[in-house]
Amino acid sequence: MIEDCFYDSYDTKDSLHFESKVVHGGLGCDPITGAVSFPIFQSATFRHKDFDVSTGYTYTRLKNPTREELERTMAILEGGTAGFAFSSGQAANMSVFGILRPGDHVLLSDDIYGGTYRIGEDIFKNQGCVFTYVDMADTEAVRAAIGPSTKMLFVETPTNPMMKVADIRKLSEIAKEIGALLVVDNTFLTPYFQRPISLGADIVVHSGTKYLCGHNDVIAGIVVVNTPELEAHFQLQLKSRGNGLAPFDSWLLLRGLKTLCLRMEKHNENAALVAKWLREQPKVKKVYYAGFEDHVGYAISKSQSTGFGGMISFEVDTLETAKSLLTKTNMILFAESLGGTETLITYPLTQTHESIPADIREKLGINDRFLRISIGIEKVEDIIADLAQAMEA
Ligand SMILES: *Cc1c(COP(=O)(O)O)cnc(C)c1O
Image 1 (spheres, rainbow, N blue to C red):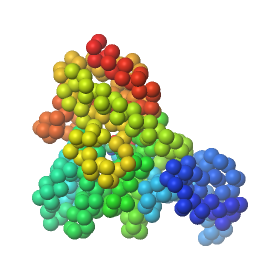
Image 2 (cartoon, rainbow, N blue to C red):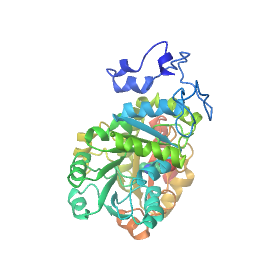
Image 3 (cartoon, protein in one colour):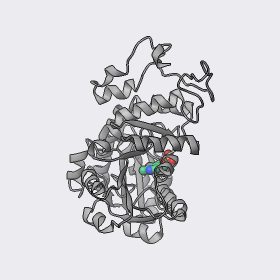
Image 4 (cartoon, rainbow, N blue to C red):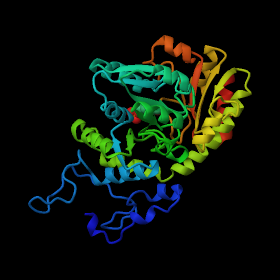
């Protein structure tokens, strides 16, 4: 198919800036028709050209042109050799953990996303894998937790929801010393702000549902790798688990991606202002935001990322204030998820982190007065005004 291109846009894009690569994607236009919006190839199967000759596509579970364009785009943006698009972030993580063999030991961030925790504890533990949760911001604690069978370090940075910042370069050194893989969940910052492969990560994983899509209308997962062995693993996962992203959803993600840089800038700008405002409120006891200059991970953030993202967590004085914020906001929506254009407020205790055992939650500070906001791209004055009225309501 590609040899029939009436133009070749792929090789000429290497010199473009990130902001332009986001807009122009992998192939960008359809190489056959020139369609500026990459087509949705809504076909399960593909006609063979001749005996033993295909177009390169045979069956959508294995490979689909629209999904492939998304995968190519994500590989370019994350600086890897190949990308893979899955039906959800969870499906992507299932396939990441699919690398493990019985007896393998994994270190994970101690306030890891609840769904990732569940994959380890409820599925892979039964298959003989062992999981240890550590504060990935504390490299000494990471070293102390390593055992003879440690095969993977799985890190979120900043973490969800405590906003702890891990030093990706240092963790990569540790992983390389012991021959383990470093996996970074880059959902919170996206490649616009942070490119873990350039810092030494082996695998980048995303819930594409969040900032990559950006519009709260698709469930998707992305993996980007940089070795042929890992490429083969994830290709087998798509083929065998059948968990690839559908063509239409791939197209929605491609469409959402085009505005990634603009959206991330606005999320980042709004979040900095809301975090500062929250900190000044008497009913707010503590604000967790990676962009505060007095955040313990601030210097590391500055050394590995170019922004802090749009996520803020905070603790209020009473359960009543927490309930009021969740139920009395008007524009801000009380809903799970994050990373979309709309500001969402979440209650981690029962929504995103209900799978995490109570004692771990307690230790982290996820109590009944703890809230998380995904700052949208609305006018920041409206976000603050809504929080202010709900806090007093
Ligand atoms: C949402 C999320 C996931 C799971 O992704 P889904 O697309 O909901 O399956 C994994 N990791 C993080 C950090 C998330 O925010």
